[in-house]
Length: 155
Image 1: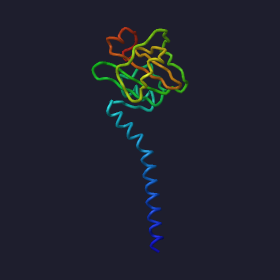
Image 2: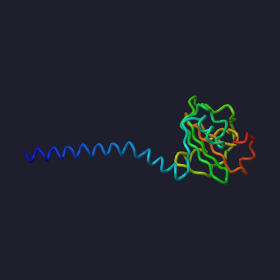
Image 3: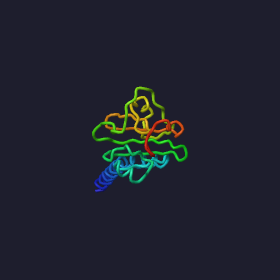
Image 4: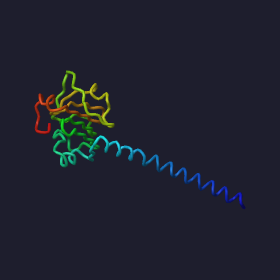
């Protein structure tokens, strides 16, 4: 009888431990992302239209249909990073392709790959952009360097 009880206890401990491990695996990535977002002050939106409605700093060329928006703006310098998923895997119509080297961003965010500037092929307003699959990455330097490009007020 004592052996049966210890087997049940052991089974309960194993099942409980497995459940706790599964919960940790499911919850930990989201918790880590929230902490990282808070540290670098990233703001996330479900769509381009929601991002543009909430913040005037979000570029107007961002398609309303874009999803999974991550946006980071430096307070004083005017630098910006943006990442979005574009369903049609195409640059927005306001963008123009370029054949010259583009500026590297000075801002850093955990969701913005460091090799993105090497993949850049276009300008959208005041932003340099790279389209990688269905992911659109854009960055804008401080207005002193980005001001040479023409665009609307939030370009």
